[in-house]
Length: 121
Length: 110
Image 1 (cartoon, rainbow over the protein chains, first blue to last red):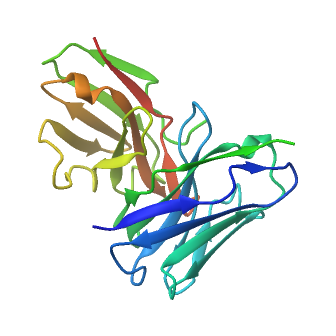
Image 2: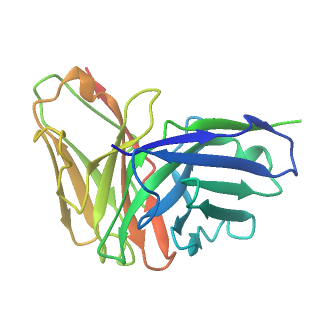
Image 3: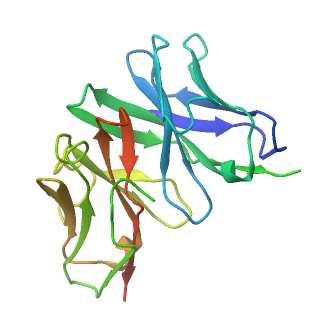
């Protein structure tokens, strides 16, 4: 049973870079896609981006200029960096395995428990 | 403003059947599969329906999904109190080249 766990600072100052890590256990990170999704307090879900175990990435165009997702297959983890954050980036950040087959199928399963990141000085 | 449109709320009494709609366009629902996620209060979302109508193991057959044209629906029959949650539809969008979500529907069991 694959399990995902997010970790990182819960408070980030405006204009700084948000950095989170997702550790995958119970299975190999290889041969799959891995994604980040966020949810502002009381609001809906927003896809941030995903990475393939080979390192290829795809980002939400609305965040592309500020997002970097990387992967470390030797440590079975992948990471998110979001630069120049503002209060609008305050959200619960989830990592998830992305089951993706071109445009034929695509869903997130399982999800991590999520971690709240607040942007405030 | 979400790319996929869902009603913000829905409700029903125990045992009833409720339906939640999800409306999109030709670039998302019209040409790709739809997935539904259930988010119980205070927890992470989990996949409820994938590929329009398929249920992961462990999801009761009270939950069913369908798609027609640029719209999709989630139906819950035999409503139970533990079904009270937020429900999100999602699909791949060819224009965005990524995943889009609906705004979510809060289901209340009266």
